Length: 287
Length: 164
Image (cartoon, rainbow over all chains, first blue to last red):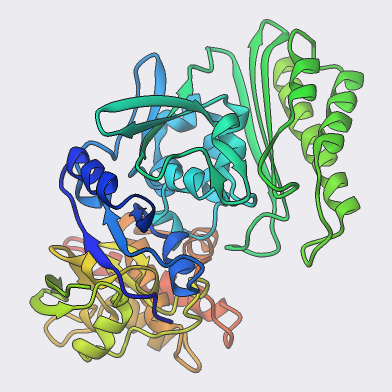
């Protein structure tokens, strides 16, 4: 399958990339890992006149902590999978990375690209919703931060302007006492999620200080389960609280029946995953 | 829609040609270079038959444009053998009957070779995890896993100072 013809631009600096984007706007698409964009172009669901390949720009490929965690636009899912820092401090990300697509796609596909693609079945947006992350965008010389909860608007729709480039995702410090996981039901390796659940908790002693829960593939976009998050904040993880939080998440889900399962089944799996995750967190506290 | 001139190091040799930007890497490798060991399987980023190594990292060459490989190093299945000597992974597939129809084999061997670079003594789980993006419809994967592990043992025995 061949994409429609396009002009290929390979800027070597972010400023050059931004001026190309300022010139071509909606006629251009930014290429990072390409693992969503190129399949879409081959199917001609996307047919941009210009491809702006940002892979030759230095400085977009790092994962580092400086009060918060910065993940640059060229950080591959495989980089997250291998990062000792992520394993130690950001367990929800560490759990999600190896469950995304397959090893070959993870070698090229990027975290930020997945967020910009905004597939409701994408995994990273749920993790970032749970972790209250911000997308950092550049437009010419101007920079703005957008919470992921506002960034993702609907299926394949974000608030990114056509002349903006998402340069990094910025994740708040989880604190010293944290729990995180990502659970995913998939029919086979490489398939999209039937259901995915991201849970990220920060503790103050036995009490949950902050709770974040993101749901994958059970609505027109990834869902932030805010009612369950509010219930958990300040609470201890006893059986009743866990059951109520799992119910609230199941209610927040808005799944459709399709070849991956019925709406009732998907809703039930949200309840199961949230309950398993919170029970694992509670067991960690009791140990 | 301007063509681009690209120079790519393919299997150790420099290849320069003019390509249309929309040309997928797999088509450039097969049609411009005549290296038909890289297969087009599903053409939808699902099967891994088109696997090549890009600067040593396995990628799907059907999900990348040839222009993106400019200035980089690509290894195809034809590049596994060195000086007429088979790579241990190739010997392994021969010894352990790691293929039947052979369509997935180039991708499987490149994944196996890349795995052994990182992990010289992989467990069965490690191998299955590494090839989880490569589909085989013949073998049930049993002999592919054995082939990669055979290659690991052979490579270890070929290390200087190793006791075979």
